[in-house]
Image 1 (spheres, rainbow, N blue to C red):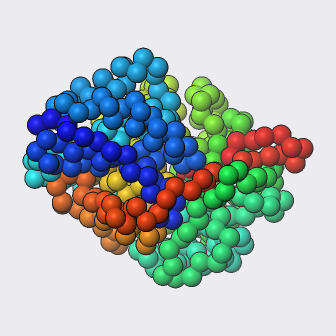
Image 2: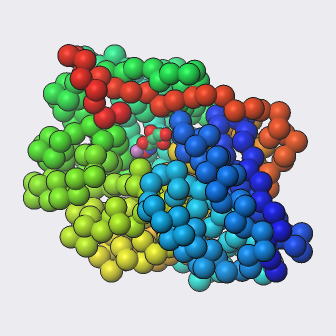
Length: 409
Ligand code: EZ4
Ligand code: CO
């Protein structure tokens, strides 16, 4: 069975998504996610100009061979645009293989290692009161693990904090990419942040008790010594993890963090290959792999990095924001269900508009996700609905310090 054609679908139900649809000469179709928040058109063009023309005539079953052909064949290695494009092809071919076999993808990866995937949701608040309401609202929706982000006195605009109050039953709808031709600017003050965050966790632990798994995302803002300080200050509150405490291109910087704190560390949502994890995993500098199938070259390399991590007792915590489409989310749910070293899955519920474009078989029940048992990935694209929403420029914010210096967002 050969690939007959492939097409790139751009849609923007409530945010932009780049989807690849591959069709075989037997009429089987597969979907892949290539969404790269804020750089969608670069990936769409990479796919349509440099990848789609290479696909017709290739054996649709030879997934590893096609992956290596696209990765090594480009000569230029790695990078988010390239790896998102390769991811889309990889996912689409796994989707096709599952449909041909009549099996959900997780069965092809070895079958389920568990009944469901523990998910965490994003609670946030501009005050301790609204944060508490947000956590309660998440618990009522079934979540059994919660990421906690709050406003910080002295910082005007901060990632991960919804600006509207959340009441029970409402979907959390913090979308960091603002529509417009330029990014908005936010501000940052490390000292203010380091002073405030431990007081928030003290409050949350007092109110919600010791058992609820709590997570926190530092979003690449800290230097190693600052990350070590935060990890130590948060130890009394027993975090499930502290995420992206530093911009981890500097992998050896994590040694310093590790020497000072036992707060578990999760890193890597912006990484795009296993090489980015080489030192972090082999030196056991992290506890959770944050990769997303979409930004990491697909199902094939995600499975490989998790097998590498397993040898070091490192578990998964795949990146699951809404800038991973339902197709990309499904891909990582199948991997998470199959691998032994699953840890937790981020889940940021897609909007109703997105769910009308992408019909998902996955379920979220009592705090656990399951990819469903439809053959392949279990996601279908309503192309007519997708065509109703054209691409709109949208960018993640940039951050400046008080003196105007650009900082990591
Ligand atoms: O800000 O995916 O842990 N989750 C995150 C995300 C990122 C967005 C950026 O597009 O850090 O919400
Ligand atoms: Co993050």
